Each structure stands twice: as structure tokens, then as C-alpha cells.
Length: 99
Image (cartoon, rainbow, N blue to C red):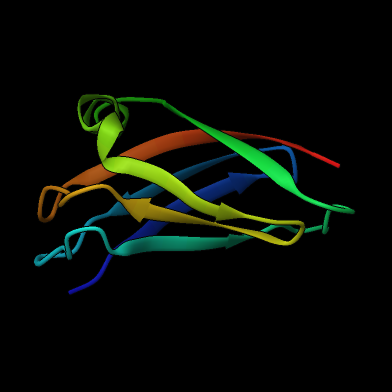
């Protein structure tokens, strides 16, 4: 199975996401595409960091396995760098700078 979003909250410049990894994660596969509630004029620079227990610990322990593969005015794509741990729950916050 693929990843499932458990929770998402926040706004355009800051939000939190918790998701459950699927049972057979794909190496270097896309994890999610996030669409901003309000588009930016040109581009964005999302920054991810761990949050909360226990899902934030999972994200912190595997931080190097997450990469923003593309970011634009309306979306950004989060991709795996390697293979995430099957069935693991990850929680992180995102701060977005954009113009």
C-alpha cells in the first residue's frame, strides 16, 4: 500500500503533516504533492523539520530520507531519498518562504 495522510493542519506559510508509510515503500519514490491553499507569485522554498511524539522522532531519525524534489508557486513534491521504513508513522512541520 502507499502512504496515507493521518492529519494535516495549518495555512499557507506553516503547516504540520502526519502520515503513515505504506507496507511496501518504493525507493526514491514520490511521497506526496502538497498544493498551497493560496498560490505564490513565482516560487517557494519549503523547509521541513520534525515535530511531536512519536511520529516526529521517526522523521528526525530518517531526516536524510526526505527531499523536496521540486517546488513552485502552487505546489511542492516531497520525495524519498532511499526507502522509508514500511508502516512507519512520520510527523513533520513545514515552513514556507515564497514570492
